[in-house]
Image 1 (cartoon, rainbow, N blue to C red):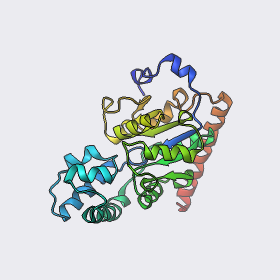
Image 2 (cartoon, rainbow, N blue to C red):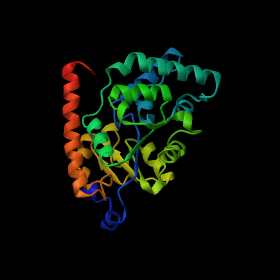
Image 3 (cartoon, rainbow, N blue to C red):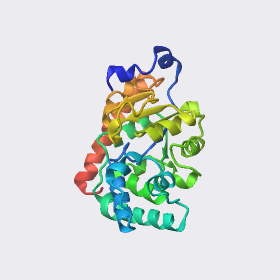
Image 4 (spheres, one colour):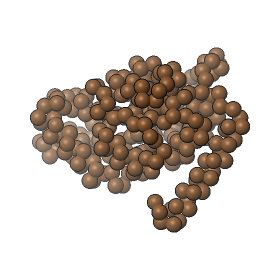
Length: 266
């Protein structure tokens, strides 16, 4: 994160806010490079159903749930018979054509390991459906690090409404002001702010700083956030000794991951 983004927080705010008890995690565009794939799966689906909706119109809406994206682009309500067919087919296309080739962003797993070593509860807060969320976490190689998860099934309305973030806060057992949301879209920022949760935003989802206005911090991606971790709101309040221990444990986990890969166990 550059100095100007770090200065989005005032010195007083930096001193006043304690380290979070829980980190709420978006998945697409935050942990795994999947936003374009989601847009293409919608374009493919629309084409099958006779709707000519170009990628350029779909891509800016990725991060919303289907309950908002569908009526915005086609006028079809997700709860309608056609909307249900469209949504189901999109899920099939995404899982069959695009999911197998997706990769986690560099540093995503190491960042989550660091957060866990520092005692942060990790809770997924995504507009994705539960089946798709599980598949994405597995594809990203982080499913073993996250126990608490909320998805579209846990909320009446998707982002940018706050329902999913509020459900994740409740699942975490912490208060909203004891949580931080990690996301990549303007919809993450708006949903989290409406829920009273500060946001750390990543540019990896494809949005500009101007579009991510309202975030407490903005970093390039998970690796950049990890590099700036000790200056971030994610770290504030952690004792220096605990931070050093976290770095040692993260290094050990990296070594174990490398061993598993070389042994062919992953």
